[in-house]
Image 1 (cartoon, rainbow, N blue to C red):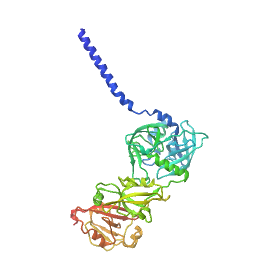
Image 2 (cartoon, rainbow, N blue to C red; image 1 turned 180 degrees about the vertical axis):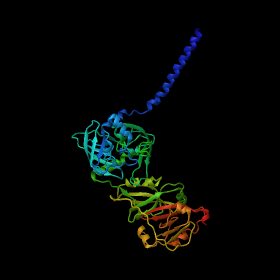
Image 3 (cartoon, rainbow, N blue to C red; image 1 turned 135 degrees about the horizontal axis):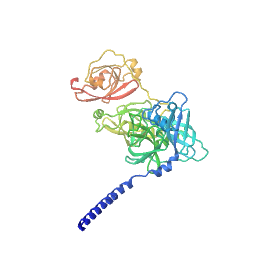
Length: 487
């Protein structure tokens, strides 16, 4: 082999080595930027506990979307138990009377935080520590609306506790990790990023929580466990998943630790959680409603009713107002309002910006305390059809509400008109039905049949009409666009 050929081979080998070395140099900084969670886990895992709640009576039912319950019919759990012998996993029969979850110690004297749905109604609650000790836990207090529970154990000594962070500083894209007991596998660590903050799920049972959304894998048994930031501080309580299978599908939700700690302090001192109440019923602003209200975008919360003698009524807030901001915080959607009001200390006066008649104004409202036994009230009133009054652009026939309708809807004489017939497909598709009471048309209060027709006198095909409709004890805005064939 000639010298020139050897030189060529050596040169090619040098180029290959240089290329590999360069590639390593380029990838090394990227790899170095990835977080190492080992220190966080080693420090905090001893303060995370496995929670087991037992029920002597009726078998537990798994809650959809709540990862704190282990399914009694999970075939994978049966396979693992049969072939690998998982001593910590209850048998299928035991699972019917057992709820598994996670929790974490918030103070050395034995206070533990977990989800309410993990221990709700339990006859016996035990927690298992990392050193395999099992301690009986007392349920100090719970709050179903925030889905949190405060437990207390006595071990005769100081227990390891987590550090509490500030969930208000979280931003989408930040790294977070969870430690918990999915499917009974104690001290499982999963990681991901914050996907969104201030996420309101619009649930009837949890309207006062603005969740932290992450892509951290959360499964059954993770409920009540801690969500950590890169400083090793707890910023949330893992609570729910969005899934059509019951298992993780890439979207998880955690309760902000600031909300939880505020509630915990109240449970310790008062035995219950106090929330503020504004005294309004609101609904989202749809695109059609935004058009009717002449809004540039469908933001804010539309007031559909005001509670008598409430702070809102005393301050002058009316049905038909659009709440644009609360205490200086803009409302992008109606579900943003309940968490803000709920966290307000009763007795506080808060500036509320509203839109009325095309103009903005700020009203100061005194926030009252929500009754502890408050429950949502629903129902639908049905009026008895009577003599019809002429048709209108919406294809609705209306009449003065009779005594039964007024009693069912809580209305006074001279308030609204009752629908006796629905002839328009548009109105029927919008959900209007005989028995509904129309209280307002385009923000004008309706006092009778004549006032109803007068309010619609100038409506033309293609116009959007905004109705405030009451059914039973609930009111809501419905926007209808008049079809061309209606005139």
